[in-house]
Image (cartoon, rainbow, N blue to C red; front, side):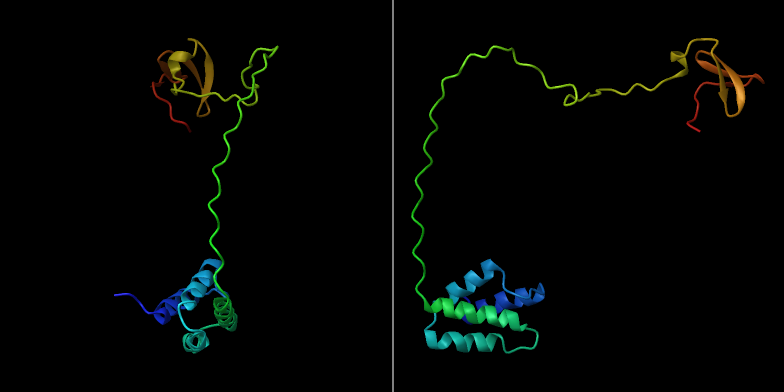
Length: 158
């Protein structure tokens, strides 16, 4: 069952009020104009009055509906003629270039890391003295040996 013109216009206005639009969007104004063209000119303003006869319809929205009713009095603009397809670009003759193609400049190149290999105690040379948690220690791969003799294989980030 098709909705009447009044129901369709009321639905467009209700959506605009729900969105708190002060004016009708361009697409909605065009739709209302098309809908009002289906009515005789005497009924258009009556329909606008009936639809806008509520307190929640702002005055600017009412003015947009009245303008759409006035536009509906004028005949619809003719449809645009189908634009011809764009002409195919003419192939250019390629000129030989004197220089060889270059890769992107260094600042434009990015490094892509495929894998992440964390550092372990095996990577540090044996005998290296370090300070760990405020105590001196010596690296003896795969261990970290503190000065009191305690050994650690996995260190925390603290």
